[in-house]
Length: 559
Image (cartoon, rainbow, N blue to C red):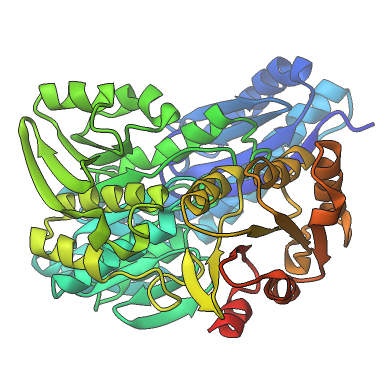
């Protein structure tokens, strides 16, 4: 049996869960009892190789997680591919020593990678990086391009045809207002809500998100653009007035943040709840929270959820100006923050309010905000509060903030796949993206407050979650007391699971916990689940359709 397994080797190009430096990182699976010798031996070989390559001033770092070890060192931005290979050779040498086998030859390895580093080096890139840093200008780089500035004040060049720093008109290089949004749930809705506020301001918003790249009303590309690549695309677009960057956990773990320290005006963490555990060495909720909090490095200011336990626990990590938001005006965190003259967005007596110390400004009633469904959708009240706090930090006017809140609809046009509401022959139908217990709980609490004779929910899950997470989605639906559950297959999301495996896990969990078999149905796809739900429904019933991979087809069927 193999004692060590290489899980991944990649470049970190921005602030990340290990540190703020660019460089290579590797994830190794191992028995926890082997971690100390693996860490010490690898660091010794990495350090020796780095010295031989002229990287004496670079640093090493490690990250521990159950069943694994991440190994990293800093390296010049222009040679990160070669640095990854050096890291892999260092580990190969360490593993050979530990196992007592023959490893790579040191002298020939050094000679090879000196040659590779010479080929990859790009001195003009480093000169532009240093010049931008000296002048306090935004610098972005990727495989194909280098840029300075943002929006209409950005300049982008091919990485192979870079100018000298003296040829750049630095007086015409500047930044634009920028917000970054992360969290377990609510990221996309919050970014879209901010877009409505920016639209009302008469500015052109640029959005990177899990659904698309969008500047103004033009969709540049569809797909998941919530990583640093999406951020760079929006910031380099010369039509973008204000950048709104959804920032997912995966991008932070794979590459780090797209922006460096203090390069965003404001960053927001919506909430932290179990999801994607077990991926990229993130084994529990605290490790996930630590990952989400990487985003703090990028912000000149930070917005946090005072109702979120993990965020409150990490508040002392924040050294920048901090704004809280809360559904509870009596929250002790809010009260203490106000006593110190701090800023907050709160929900009080049915209204959204902006707080600065002892001054409370009422913005508008919850009944004026369509996405809250007259206050039933508490999670969207929280999203609205977070958006208000971010908008204030971006310098948007109160009139624009209020207009955005009033105009933004729970529709397939404004917020596709997020709480889209339909009336089908007297049946209330809600379509939402919720894909974890935290998000589903919020939706089920909302639907419980809505009048209906009977309630149905469709459930499924992606195959990269563990069995416990899959079961918990099913049990969350059952505990809410819904009258019928349709378990749907998501064939595009099997991710290594066999067809039928996830529905079988869900059904077993439901039956084992006493949910009646006659109240369970199965569907081969999300579209089929929609049809079955409509066949089951009668006037005055409520259907909650959790839809991920076939969103467009389901919305078309209902619309």
